[in-house]
Image 1: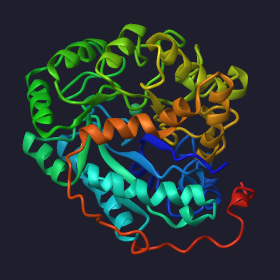
Image 2: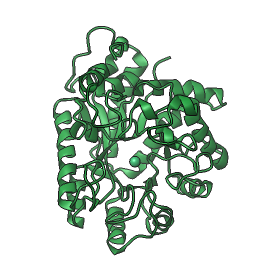
Image 3: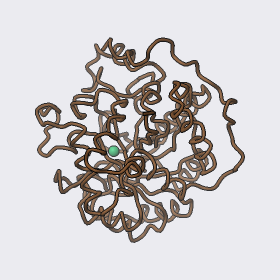
Image 4: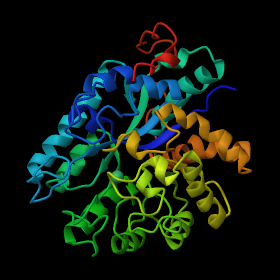
Length: 395
Ligand SMILES: [Zn+2]
């Protein structure tokens, strides 16, 4: 069986490159080894993602974020920046990293539906040939902004769109400049409503993940454009305001939105205490992720609203992922688990990539139907020598 083509709807790749100082072009074992002595962040030496590892996993397409919050009393970049100017500057550093990866042929930005189809036409045949040629392909990315605090004015939103921004999640944790997020309450302020109108006029995908309950429900009323929940699990299984209630899931399904299953262990298992609970002690495995996916399928009566938004390496590593996941390549084990729950081959394909690709195809501007990159003409990367499946033995 060829590895499935996987779409991951939420990866903070540039945050890892710029703030964690990880060279994501290197094999995962290298990245882990060169930071293993550091103690500045809890996930040092425990990362699960690099670009070679994504290729190995068949994760040929992702939503990649820019992420920079404003928090007036912040004392570290992880918690937030002291001004919108600083937050904007950080998002531009992150953008510059994505652009540099594109220049190097490591990644390719997907800005429109035509580019999406061209990209799929590279990856899907390469995976089905099972000749490792996918290991030389660029990883596609759709640019999304997680938390909109960094947008100093609406003109900055237009600049971001010109840079290829195609999705926006206005909130993150706590009160925000435009909308209140996880652990906060309260509704959209005037600036937030203006942001929603402008995002709608650009046709951006509205990412409802991290919106607090009040903001979530009003967003569904106010926003007429396409929406999704990029990395979000079920409140019925793990009670927390960060999670989607059944009512929210049904409302999203009515809008034909797709919900990406997150692999952050505290959102998978109730009662998780950061820094104390371990994936082993909580019994969190890939099966637990499937429980959340399955819950959405059961209450909506279909698999068409489920996808993957792993959030792997989103400020946590293997200390906070399912115990049987060591790298993003372990996503390739999900299809078998989904089949065991009775999902059909079409359902599994939809969950692994098809549903989010459908959502993107509808939401993205059409673009130029002429291929931007002809198969065989793209800047090839050398296929790594040796058996890449052994690349993790050093860690
Ligand atoms: Zn998040």
